[in-house]
Length: 123
Image 1: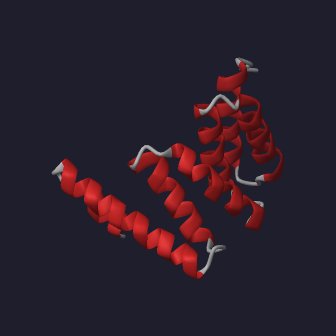
Image 2 (image 1 turned 30 degrees about the horizontal axis):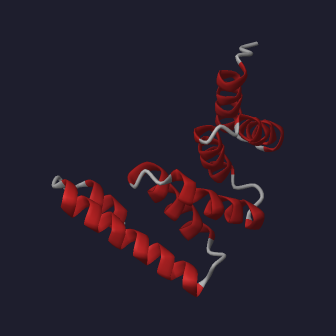
């Protein structure tokens, strides 16, 4: 909820300070429980979308997926990180896995769309 508060702050310096505070809360929570899935996901979202530190999210997303192998939202985020760093084949593998394993039609369609955007195959 603190991250949502940070998004309402107009002053860039104050907003960044609040986001860094949020980061410290997440990191503290992981010290207490390094396998807390919601925290791993939340910290990754913070790094990718708020702090523009996607490389820092990768390790937490990989840990999340090692704990919760069907965390499809985590797979989408990790695929995004992979693409940002040129690991397109790894991202495609994740999208293929979502298509194969997820029973959620919206997730499957989004994975197919993202995969098509990477491969250029729009069949």
